[in-house]
Amino acid sequence: MTTNPSLSIITLMTLLMCLTPTLIKSEEGIDVLLPISLNLTVLTDPFSISAASQDFGNITSENPGAVLCPSSPAEVARLLRFANGDFSYDGESTTSSSPGFKVAARGQGHSLRGQASAPGGIVVNMTCLAKTAKPAAVVVSADGTYADVAAGAMWVEVLEAALKRGVSPVSFTDYLYLSVGGTLSNAGIGGNVFRHGPQISNVHELDVITGKGDMVTCSPKLHPELFYGVLGGLGQFGIITRARIALDHAPTRVKWLRILYSDFSAFTKDQERLISMGNDLRVDFLEGQLMMSNGIVDTSFFPLSDQTRVTSLVNDHRIIYVLEIAKYYDSTTLPIIDQVIDRLTRNLGFPSGFMFVQDVPYFDFLNRVRNEEDKLRSIGLWEVPHPWLNMFVPRSRILDFHEGVIKGLLLNQTSTSGVTLFYPTNRNKWNNLMSAMIPNEDVFYVIGFLQSAGGSNNWEDLQNLNDRIINFCDNSGINIKEYLMHYTRKEDWIKHFGPKWNDFLRRKMMFDPEKLLSPGQDIFN
Ligand code: FAD
Image (cartoon, rainbow, N blue to C red):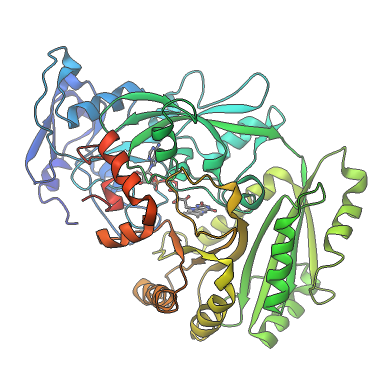
């Protein structure tokens, strides 16, 4: 994708321009005037344009022609109807051919490769809708079983509002400063998924404005095709404006454990056993990560007195597998929580003396990545390129993956950067009607190579490693599914969706036939 050449003119326009017709570009590079009668709050000042052109990945930059800061879902519907060539918004009820400019919803812009961008088109800033939502961005139901949430709100806001009522969502991403609409467009995964499913499995109902500009309320019973399509649908079928999120009783505290393994088989055996447990004893959260001697060994979780021997363990073995589990509790379970932890960990196969426990408030546990963000920001390593690679690996090939990718490629680098996530989850918590793609096995592993450029690492070298990882999987016949992927070739998308591709295409034609939405995903461009 190339940058729009007329942007220098457009970016000279200021906020005041919402009072005059706004000029944007169609896909073919033809100027399109957004008429005043559309009555939209459209921003074209350099700051707004620049902010909407970047994302967390810090690798791409795609200037939109303008940013819409809507104060109601009706404004978004009006914009999309106009983009479809429907001029009935001003009472004239005429239809013409589509002006051809693209539209992308943008939540927090924590995408990695411009997925929330709309080159030359219009980016819809979903936080504006959350700020103006009436009566509030997050409304917890009277019985506390669900919350109606403006899709531009962040998960941390949902959590804060729910906790005031003693309830909480059940499935969280590791990082809470992501928008609800953004994670629902992907899947929303983390350490609760094995037990409760991804965030897309914990939604009762959605308000969606389709690519055609229709405002539709959908659920498993009402317009199911749109409901399931949008969940994990990469923003292709509609813009979510409201989501009804499932809530449950909130615990108050968490026993948070990190347990170190030098033996990969023992590590995965214990991980898989823990996620298969079905009784009350089971853990509430399970993840895992790698500590490698060619990376920065972060020992901050461990007591000061143990940090040296943890570092030595990593250096001696070159790679250590960290099982991360959590058990939630409150005043009713307080008297037995230590016994529960004892029973949970008694038969695990880690070397003795390498289990570490913290006891923290529930909110702090869920918000734990914020501390990492603060640390990285303070040393200038947050706003750097992030060529992250996330994937799901079928359990049946996890040994081959470990040998070929972790030991063969990662451990042989002179240095590695960032965190490597490594944990199994259960397929039965995902609904195959949704657009999100996962491997076709009951248990699969979530693997995240969360590398950051900066210092001696440049992002192209890190990307090169990602390419080699993907090639290794392809050549070894390991059928991974990438998550948060960005493909530029249609055949890669067709391969990604596999048997669901025809449904994906059919839904696109149903809900966004002019192919206007989320062009930054590069699926239908
Ligand atoms: P954006 O980047 O703004 O948008 C992402 C896509 O969704 C775009 O295509 C956009 O057009 C579309 N979109 C946004 N809002 C809407 C809407 N309302 N309706 C329709 N389409 C919409 N993911 C996990 O699953 N688990 C994790 O633990 C996790 N941790 C992360 C930690 C960090 C530090 C970061 C940066 C990302 C992490 N992610 C994680 C990835 C994250 O879930 C995705 O990047 C997600 O898209 C971010 O939400 P956002 O609001 O920033 O989305």
